[in-house]
Amino acid sequence: MSGPPASVRPAAPAPDAEALQEFVTVRDWLRYAVSQFQSAGLVYGHGTQDAYDEAAYLILHTLHLPLDRLEPFLDARLLGAERADLSQVLRRRVKERIPAAYLTNEAWLGDFRFYVDERVIVPRSYFAELLEEALAPWIPDPERIDSALDLCTGSGCLAIVMAHAFPHARIDAADLSADALEVARRNVADYGLGERVELVRSDLFGALAGRRYDLIVSNPPYVTGPAMRALPAEYRHEPEIALAAGEDGLAAVRRILADAPRHLTPGGILAVEVGHNRAIVEAAFPALPFTWLESRSGTGMVFLISGDQFG
Image 1 (cartoon, helix red, strand yellow):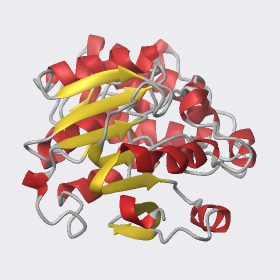
Image 2 (tube, rainbow, N blue to C red):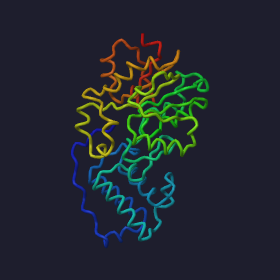
Image 3 (spheres, helix red, strand yellow):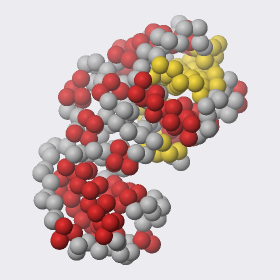
Image 4 (cartoon, helix red, strand yellow):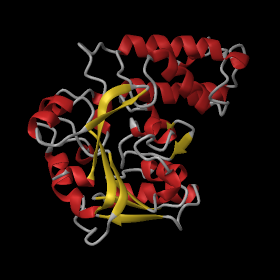
């Protein structure tokens, strides 16, 4: 997760309606948006990493243009209604510090698009890259995974990606939040996976008694107390229940490690995302032989352990 800015600068005054008429083309609006975002000191990390990418995304989405083709449209002239729409979206991003994903109600993990709103955190998991290769080499044959669990599913994004990575698996997607499960239900339906993905309201493993899995994946709350107190405004739009994990960030991880062995099949694997908390995890569980995974966007953010390694 991105850290808070050193300081938050006040936004430049918004231009009046007459001044907005001077912004004629997509290029004009792109320049204006980047300037506004930079001046306001916005914080990113909900799908984009800087002012330019976020401005381009919001402009293309608002104008219903392909998200991967900005250049052909830069000199296109905008209608009055389009300028009004852009003005409203950009104003909300700056004034209310709403993450772009909530303004557009969409988020992406690789090639997968998901509906999101403020009932769920914006999907941004290192698992997305790891699941592109179906957790190889730790899972040598994806077709032999028959049962899997996405614990703390939120929007259902990882359960859906898992359903594509492991084509024969039945997947449980569990979350404590009934609101989050409503969002997950919409995404599961959008992908036509209602027959393979079961949504379960559960406080971690609480409602999963007797269920065992070849693979358990979890992106649980893991933000430490100091990090929660320093969260930028953008991240405070997300449900606190999906972020905060006690002072040391391990409140959920401790419970997952305590209960996971009873829910793994022989040879089953547990993989948990903990962000930058690797040192905290290793200090808290020195006897457990974690394997720390590598992805394109980070190393040591996800640990893996098999059922027979719990001792």
